[in-house]
Image 1 (cartoon, helix red, strand yellow):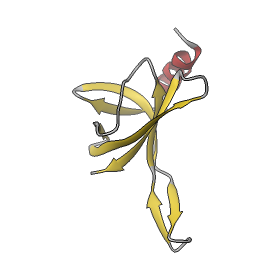
Image 2: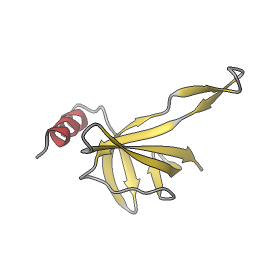
Image 3: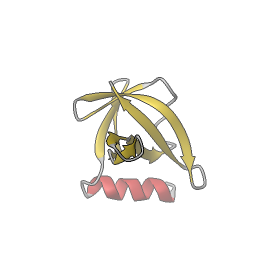
Length: 93
């Protein structure tokens, strides 16, 4: 098991990750929904993201995922660090 997988397994066992359903399968990912300022600071927008080990999940732009009963579409997937971890940017549907 890779170090990043061990890290995510430990986080899952501690209850720090969120269940994400993709095509009927469930994996646990780090789900974030930080507010981002837009329109020169006059409005806030949510920037939904999930982080996960690359070996656990394969996502591409256009895929849909379900998080806590809400459906999201993948906008972009990027490698993090050495490539063993991925970050998917999401849009809520």
